Image 1 (cartoon, rainbow, N blue to C red):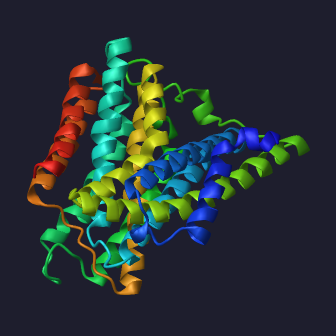
Image 2: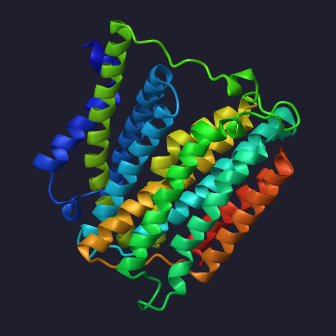
Length: 375
């Protein structure tokens, strides 16, 4: 009974899974599809917050970077599950992967980074940024975004905004390799680049601890191991039901939006908002607490995880399955992407942020949403 009180979202999700997989009619024939989709959206969102909670608990006990990596892997699994469902269900949606990736980048740059600067500036005027770490994030985001979402429009091996299977494998491999180098830089060689600047760009981490790193945590007690096992158990269970439910939600969104005449691009945007919700709120809370650097780490780290983990997995999968997906963005979306990346780079180059910089990024994000309905 105590477990039921602590994890109501999980048990609601289990009931939904049993009904949808054992008793419900096919998603295409279900009545009140958008109502059901709305209920599923709320249940999945609550479960994703629980996944983030358990990952944070494990991060506190195991230390970084394990907690961050764990949350990143969970988000990647959810994203990949939705993308595969969209590609394999019915006639498939060859643009769903592209739309989800692009929406993730626009949310990260405008929704998360822009809003964080607005909220942080509202409470603390201007805030300091560790430009070394922020530039390292953007230095990876920019080329990977261009290789994934712009380059397919200009390759000649295939017709249309697509890639040949050899190109998909190549881009997937270099994305994984760059992410591996980044993780090494973030956790080992340049760890202080991602700390809050104090003062004037110096890092709180750049102290004697950087030269003489603290010893690894002592061996956990039996009680701590029980906490680790408990959190890991609930993390895995909750993640499983989220993946099962989000597959059904992807079908409902695809069918429901099509019947209402909504543009297909909105499908990927909806999923990106759902997956990024915990990180989005965490970034805003960090900015309000005058930890803008942590907010930027969360936001830019989410975008980098999508480009460096979710994208390679999908590229390998579609190459193995012999499927063709459209990755190249339309011209107007390329303009918005380049503008967002450029403004984000300019905003962090001074080492200070304010409401003006955040407002520009957020307006670009709103403009992108507006152009979905008014292309």
